[in-house]
Image (tube, rainbow, N blue to C red; front, side, top):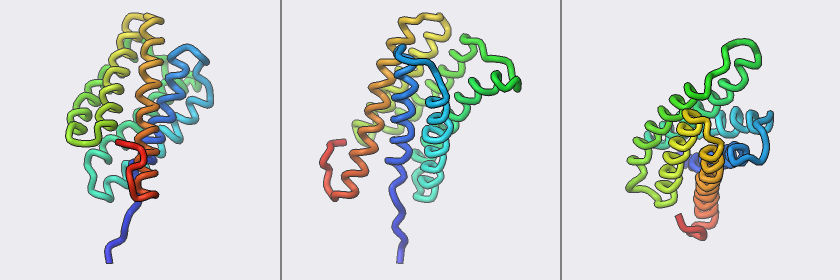
Length: 183
């Protein structure tokens, strides 16, 4: 008898979506980075996505494994860039260097977007908006433009909301046995 495993996708998407929403409320200018965002980055955006990625590995889903573990470690790394200097363990990263960090993640995301093209349209939308978000954040850090940063924040809210929507749509479809929310 084959054991049925849970779909880890909603966990990974919810961890990504909710953390992305909170960070981009900051980027849009509503509140500063605080322990709330860093905690979400480490635990829900970070660790929960790594767990979802490991579960996707067990399910034989290479795309899900790569996406969730990579973006989970993105969140943990991002928080480390904020915390390590405060602990005296590293120099603060100049904004221009962070632009390259974000650009590298943007390039990774573009390749991941290609992997979504025969998937759910909502998943493709999440990745396209993530590509745009990384580009805008890199431009913000390279130029110091507050306006570009605010635009990135609003665009990031769309990306995070789309990921959270997809998480809930997948979970509800599995629980109810029908696609109540289209994805």
